[in-house]
Length: 102
Image 1 (cartoon, rainbow, N blue to C red):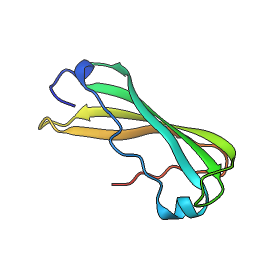
Image 2: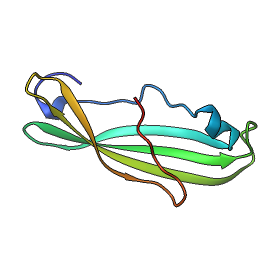
Image 3: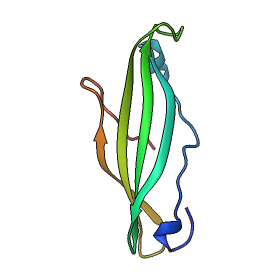
Image 4: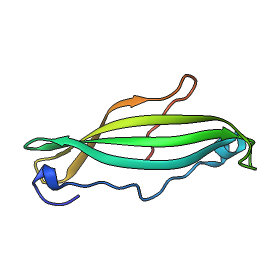
């Protein structure tokens, strides 16, 4: 993300990873994506989608269920021109929770 014009800001997924607890429980990430959905004079909205599945632990197949989780972010610039990212909404299937990590 560069520049002061929010309409030109971009985001991309650089790494998707299931931690060892998730793998031991049979939770696997199948794909991730992020896209800009709108912008204004000092902000831009992004939506991220995470596709996942529950499969036999450690083996990765056969899979019993597929899931789609979504997260919305708002990005603004602070008074020094540094990007600030705020999670504005998240949705996950019943029994699942999305946690933000550094």
